[in-house]
Amino acid sequence: MHQLIEKNEEILINKSIAGEGLFLKNIWVKDLLLNNQDHGDLKYFLKLVESYKLIYPKLSNSWNYYLTDVYSDIMNSGIQIDSLEFKSINSESVFNIDFINGVLSGKDVDFIEALAFNEIDSWETKSSVTLFYNKNNQINFLNQAKSFKKSFEEFDTPIKLKINEESLYENPVLPFILKAIEELHY
Image 1: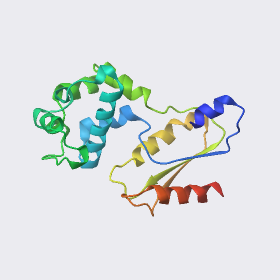
Image 2 (image 1 turned 135 degrees about the horizontal axis):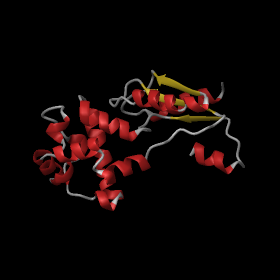
Image 3 (image 1 turned 90 degrees about the vertical axis):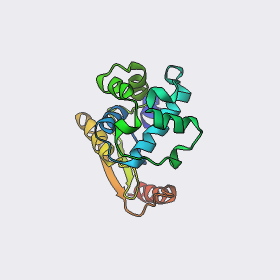
């Protein structure tokens, strides 16, 4: 949103504050498929796949395309992703090997294009940007924040990363709002 408002030039932005998130989806997905060791990341990725299946007609494949038979059957039974229990925290035990290879090799063009379309690219901005990350979140977005910040270095964009020590995983919104208000007054 910050980038779009700046292009308008009628509104001056002095500061932008955002919460955690996946800004560089391609990097995160490839890392997850190669190295995943976390239940939270697997569930988050399954939610991403589920949303892409609904949004992008070319990605509306059956769960068998994305998942191993065991997890495909579980998803087809209607279970909620948050209720999933993984027998092993290993990408190959959850995801179909053809899907993994397609993403990692770049051959699954439709999925990779959807990821790229939903990424936030760096741009030249004069306003400061602050990214808050929750210390107690089950999904580690801090590496995403560091990579995102690094992508702005060529533009000399002032980006600050702040860890919200007071955040709760169950409800991170109120602590984020309080920290954002505090940040606006600096």
